[in-house]
Amino acid sequence: MTAPTCWIGVAARAHVMVGKADGFVMFAHGKHSAVKQLRPGDWFAYYAPTETLGGKDTVRRFVGIGTIDPGEPEPTQMMGGTIEAWMRRATYLDVQEADIYLLLPQFDFVTDPAHWGMYFRKSLFKTSAADFSRIADAMGVGPQFNLGD
Image (cartoon, rainbow, N blue to C red):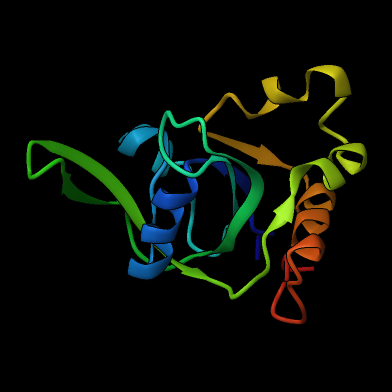
């Protein structure tokens, strides 16, 4: 069996909380090309720069973590049915939020700490199992965390 891929998604905290409550993930404002990259069993963690989309209400924490459920990407309607978006069903874990500033010095993918924000400009990106484990540990994820070792 192939080890699951680890992903970091970037979204407003309020949007992540809707996904958590309804059991889905969505990336890049619902683009199919983003969500189809993930496979059932993959791990994801959401980093939230703000509370609301485009807001000045700074969060800068990892706010959600979980796994992608079996099944294919599903279309859904947003903005009162005027926009089609794509999602995947997901299972979120109950976790504590983790401050990005405590994790930045530990991340292998952040090679220039002075410009750490540039790494989070994408809506979705892969990360190593080691960096993902650091996020999971900081969020208090216990024995249910398994990268298929």
